[in-house]
Image 1 (tube, rainbow, N blue to C red):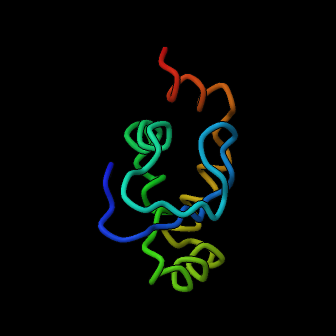
Image 2 (tube, rainbow, N blue to C red):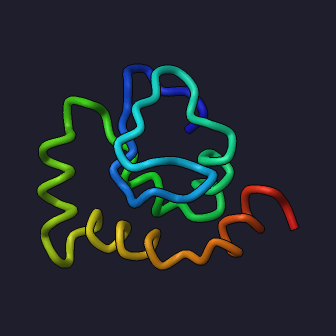
Image 3 (tube, rainbow, N blue to C red):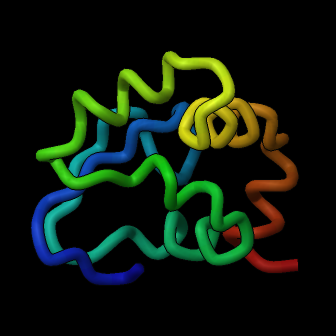
Length: 89
């Protein structure tokens, strides 16, 4: 998960201090996002290749899809929980 072959975009909700909605990454995923995805693998569902953005956005807007559930669960994470995961215990 640390290295992506082609550019990817994060389509989940903005996570303060970690990642903003629509952030594009070429090469390495930022360390904090990598740590969060390691503890909360559902985050990976919303890091998509640029070629799949339209499909992923449609899925996020479709109730019950993996992407929609992932978006809601990420949005529900508390700032304290994110900080604990990304900065250590």
